[in-house]
Each structure stands twice: as C-alpha cells, then as structure tokens.
Image 1: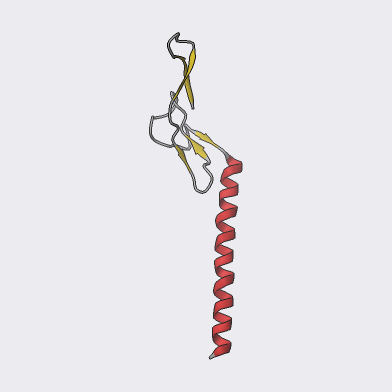
Image 2: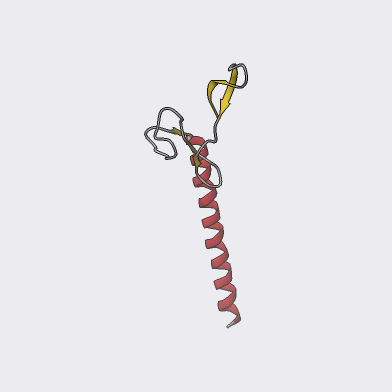
Length: 82
C-alpha cells in the first residue's frame, strides 16, 4: 500500500509498506496506516469492506449447508443399509 510520496533517490516516488488485512477467504478489513494503531485491526479505525464481508458470510454459509446436506445423505444411506 502507498503510505507516502517522499521515497526514492529524488524523493519524488511513492513509499510502499506491507498492508495488514483480515478475513478469510476474502480480506474484508484493511489496516489504515497513519490513522489507526499500526499492526492491529480495528472496526472503528480501519477500512471495512461490507461487500467482501457479505461474500465471506455467504461462502461460510454455503460450506456449512453443504456439510449438513452431506451429513443427511450419509445418515440416510447408513440407515437404509442397516
């Protein structure tokens, strides 16, 4: 992420720094250098991407529903065999 513009030999290039981000599989909260506590994520100070958060929730919901469906199928096949 760009954190300034006084870098390089002539002091006229952008300064880059690693960006802390949170969320899996999609990052939905990003550290804001210069505004928030560096190296820590906070909902009040950092950039929160609602769309990415909703996609994360949908992905986890889909995985959970797929696991429940697979468990039901496994249970119904097991009961018909016995």
